[in-house]
Length: 124
Image (cartoon, rainbow, N blue to C red; front, side, top):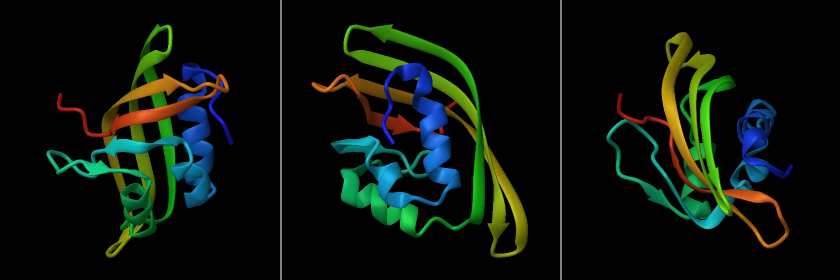
C-alpha cells in the first residue's frame, strides 16, 4: 500500500494496522523515520526499530480508528493531526487506548508520501 496524498495517510495506516501487515505498515515510513512509542517515551529511529515495536505490540487483535483534525501541506512536506483509538485484547482482557497523533510526511521522488516523524502521543 502506498500513500498518494497526505489526506490518505490515516486511511492507509489504518488498513495496514488493522490487517496486521507489519511489513506494509513499516513500509509507510522513511528508512530513518522517527517514531514515539509511548507518552514521553524515547523516540525510536529507523524502520528496524519501528518493526520491532510493531511485532511486540502489547495489544492483540488490535484495530484502530482515526478521526482526522487537520492537515497542513506545503510543497513536499505535510503535517497531519488526528485523534485515534485502538481496541483489542491486552494481558487482562479487552482493552482500549487513545491519543492524539502529529505526523510529518514527505513527498518522495515517485510522488508517494512516506512518514518521516510520527508522534502518536502528542502532549495535550
